[in-house]
Amino acid sequence: MSSMTSGGDTRKISKGRRSSSFEKEKEAGTGGDAPLKKGPWTAAEDAILVEYVKKHGQGNWNAVQKHSGLARCGKSCRLRWANHLRPDLKKGAFTVEEESRILELHARMGNKWARMATELPGRTDNEIKNYWNTRIKRMQRAGLPIYPDELCERLTNGNLKSQNVGTFTNEASQHIDLSQTNNFDVADMELKNFQLHRGISHALHAPFVDMNESNMFEQSSDSSHTCNFLFPTMCSSKDHRESEMSEILYNSFDSCTSNVVPLFDQYYGYTCEKISDHPRLLFTPCDPVVNTSDQFNSDNLTGSHATLNGNASSSVPMSEAMKLELPSLQYAETQDGSWGTLTSPLPSLESVDTFIQSPLVEPILSDPISPPNSGLLEAIVYHSNSMKDSSNDLLLQETMTTVTAHQTAKSSTFNDLVKTEWDELGEPNSPLGQAASVVTDYAPISMCSVDGRQSRETTPDLDDEHEALTHLLGSFRKKRKPKQIDYMRPDALLDLGWFGNNTEYGSNESKSVLKDGLSAFIGEDCKSPR
DNA sequence: AAAGGGGGCAACCGCGGAGCT
DNA sequence: GAGCTCCGCGGTTGCCCCCTT
Image 1 (cartoon, rainbow, N blue to C red):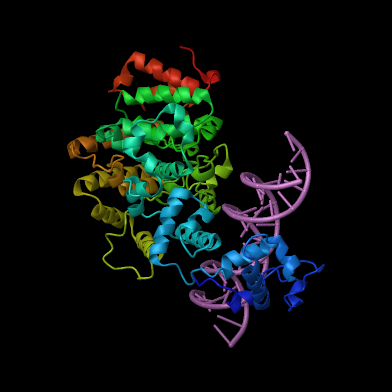
Image 2: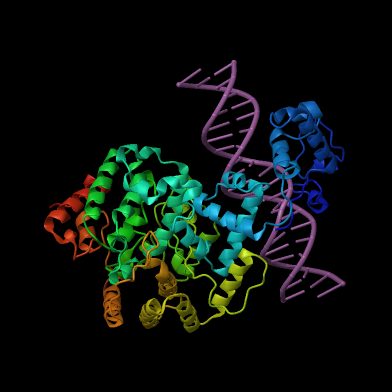
């Protein structure tokens, strides 16, 4: 990023955005009743503003025009001062550390540029915003995830907890009082935001996790951490029914181990309002069904940019800090519709835009050639290009270098299966081509519990896993096409098998409880007859 | 060397919150 | 409580520069 100007960048000064007739006013002090000037600031205007601030201090920007004669509106003055004239501004390009920090902050905060700026001394929100938008574009072009995997790992493993997310230590989350959960703060949500993105990334491979008998609950010595960690958001809703649902679900989940955990994990970051607004979204994007039971259909994939480029993202609506808004560029990619007919967009198209990709690709480990030493972003882009230039086989090979041999074996096995599957279908732009890479790329993450523990400590035979994969694929093959699950029906959801057949959910009693919960959450209207 | 396109960035716009009357 | 003003934030726009063709 080029250096920020401080009124001294003649290039920018002269370029004259919205060059209007005011441009002719070379004299800065044309205040009084003269119409307010727009466009680039001149050095003379800058000098006047600086002088004014020296005298009167910041604030009361609307008074600048009156007192200094500067023909600029207060907003313009404030902006100019904040972005260019402030003496504490840091000039020059972002350092690698700053880039990294921005990534980290964005993962936590989303597009809260002003807040991010407060944590990057000398940098302005506008600067950060511009940087980010540029970065997003570049990442998009490169088909890369926004967040580096390493950052994803760090965040998930709690490295940020000490900074701003202390309330989400496992310790704290174990004892969340549902009655107090309205008090969780923005920072909490921000971390969950990131968790969400990770969670979404888990979505695509969650079934495989389960298939490996390594579901997240089992991995964690205290599976309730997962639920507890997530439920505060649910319970923060004023909707009491949702709270009830939360409890029902929580109790249900807590009493069992099930692959539903990663599934729901992904959604607890959402606000209850949004979830309740779009009850279907609770179940759609995570889509373990995509692989395990049903529906590899466009509905499920609609919001998932992830599969387009091997990145997981989502289009589930979020609110406020939960949003990781992106420019529409992400959406455009989806709309290209290279695969899958997105016939049934999610309720809110706007929401489709609002998701950011989770880190899905492995960090740059396998490329023996170092990227140009021009910073974090360049390194990522460099890696992207390498990835893109590779054939599928190379991709697999590369993946194999980044995961353990065991995991890789599974991943490649799956890739082969998936690839074959799509080849059979003659799908040129198979999402599974992407999804497969997602799976491979994410294998290491998926094997991790929330606390970062490896889940593969107890490892089934590869043969068994291959068999399981084959079985999975067969099931996927059978079910993904026309069959449409009625997500509004608790019984249908239960029948999907998300809640496992080998768990306590298998009991009629548990099913009943869970069904009640789902009914309560989805709505009585949708409750199926018992 | 010229033309075109994209990148980068400054600045504007609209909206919403806070404070005051 | 309603209305107004100020301020700040996030999104968007428009233009210059530079690179590629």
